[in-house]
Length: 377
Image (cartoon, rainbow, N blue to C red; front, side, top):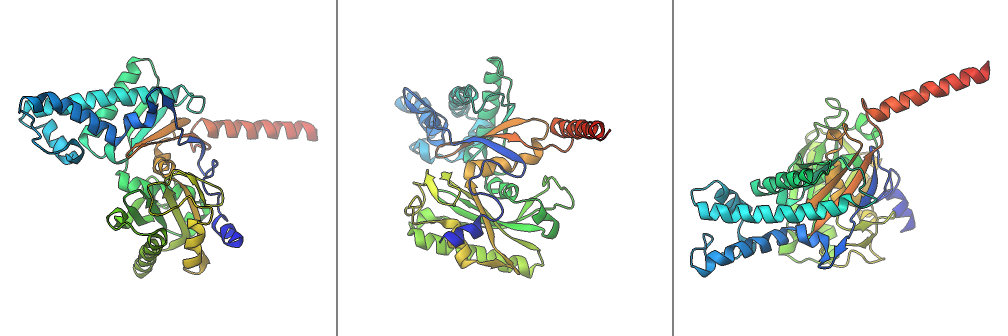
C-alpha cells in the first residue's frame, strides 16, 4: 500500500495547500454560533425551511400557491417560474424567502470575512447546486448589496461554470502545467453524497494557456444514492466509468494525460485518505484501511503508455479552482458552495501573468541583478 500511495502523489500532494496557481489558505472552516454550525444557516435545506415559513400564513387561509407540495420537494425550476409568473402572491412568497436567505448568507459571509484566514478577501464566488437557479443568483446579488451597505469591500458572484462542470474543470488546476504541453485532456471525477460524475476535460491549452477556455468534452453521471451500494461496489462502478471514458477519448483521437483529478467531500490527507467529512458517501470512506487514489491506481495503472498519477482534493476547493483564470485581477479570493451544507475555501494567487505579483517578480530579479553586478565589481 505504501508504494501505491507514492505512485498517486508523484505530481502533487493530495489535499495540498500549495497548488500550481494558488495557495489554499483555508478550507472547510466550521464556524459556530449559539444556534450551531453557521453553514447550516446558509444551506439548501435552510432555504427550504425559510420558504416553508413564508408559506404558512397563506396555508392557514387556504391560499397557498404551492398547494400541498412539501417545500423541500418544490423544484428550483418551479420557483424560478413563480418569480416571473402572473401569480403575484406566489412571486411575493419566493421573493420573501430569497430576501431572508440573503440576510442569512450575508451573516455567515460576514463571519467568514472576520476570521484571520479570510482577512482581506477581495472576491467570493458562490457555487453549489443552489447557484444553478434564478432564485440563487438573486440571493447572491442581494447578499452582495447587504455586505456593501455594511462597508465590506468584497464582490460576490455566481460561479462562472455550471456547478456540474465546475467540479470537473477545476481538476485541471490540480495538475502541473507540463502535462498540458503534451496532452489535450484529462480525466476528472466529482464525488458527491448523491452522485458521482466523471468526465474528460479538454484543456484547450493552445488557445488559452491560462485554461480559461477549458471545457467538458464528455461526462457520465451515476446516482449512487438510488442504489445504496457498498464502498467497494461504488469504487468498482467508478473504475468502469473511467475506463469507458478512456476508451472513448482514445477512439476519438484525444491525447489523454495520464492524470486523474478528483474532487471529494471532506478533509483530504496527504496520503489520499479522508480524515473527516465523507459521512454522506456510500460505506465508510474515512476508514484508515481505505484509500481511493491507491485503489484507482491499482485498477487503472496506466493511461496510454504512462503510469497513472492522481491528485485528490476537497470538492469545494476544486469547484473554486475552476475560477482561477478569471481571478487574476485580485490577490485573495474565496469560494462558498451552497448545497447540503456550506463548503468554503479561501485562496491567494501565487502568480499573475500581468498583475502585481509578476511586477514584483520583475523588480526582485532586477534588484538581484544589480546586487550581483555590485558584488562582481
